[in-house]
Image (cartoon, rainbow, N blue to C red):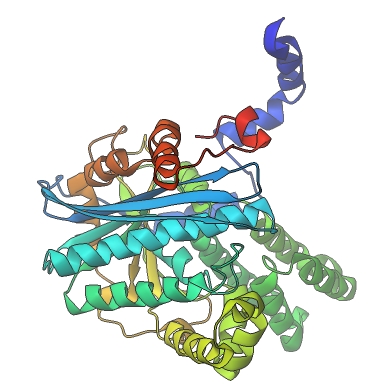
Length: 446
């Protein structure tokens, strides 16, 4: 049978029950009933009729990476901002060598693409002289603020992330001064901010229920274990086992909560299972994740030492080490003033997947910076404008947002464009013929 189809079918049948559950429902948990109840309390129905399409700016980017036989790589990153009939373009192209892991190389190129998006958005605001309208960027804003700078994988561009954060800060400031509603929109997301927030409530209730059965100091230890279960799972589970040796069955429910917190269960899955009507979640203000908080604390205590430790390669590339470090320290200090992000989910059709939206906390009149908040907190804020913006661009199951889809179609880098247009133009401009690596010739990259 061609393509190993007989073996494929046999393997699927042997794993049918597990695969069916994971593909149709996701992860089942002893806490499902409690999570479903809390989801209902944190879910708000959308009752108004869909509004007419409104004026807005949409930004998206695309990137491609091509390895060559001599060990050099070429990348192209481009972005487009659309506003009515206006187009604001940004493109970055360069070659580089790298001895780092391919995953780190791809991360570098992704950050370059995000950077072109930031610059295209800024250009649209300034050159278009735009004010008081929504600006939609494809992807998470919160995630961008968590990419705290360090050496990149590309030789000659090790300090690039400093420029990334300089321009991100400039865009955020420009949006705030022009009263632009900045929204990062993700149609696919694997984060678990909402689930983790609900789990923290379940844990608090459980600790209250335990009462005097567990000492107060050990309750504090349990809370700390929960806070680090995702970034330090081995140490956290070890600490929990020690407590279970002391308290036995009293901590069975705590163990279930920790198991759920450690498991991969994205918010999208919970919304799909527990939200039965169009609506939106209560907004959450997101503090830095534990790893980013540790790095921010290092920056706060000694930004010069952080720069020396995290930009060792960039320092060797710099013409003047002291000048580079002074600039790095200025950028690092500025990062601490970036706003916290507020995140929520909007489900516009129960047959569809939800949209995740990030927006700076100053959208709601708050003046909170990254270092002001530890963990996550529910925000009592009116998010009706954000919901209305998403409704106005929604065109059903095929078009989650007509504005973002249009810019995606125009900016997308296809294999044909990269190889037949850009690479050919490169060869002509440089009067040479480049030879792709064997890995690239065997694999058809998109």
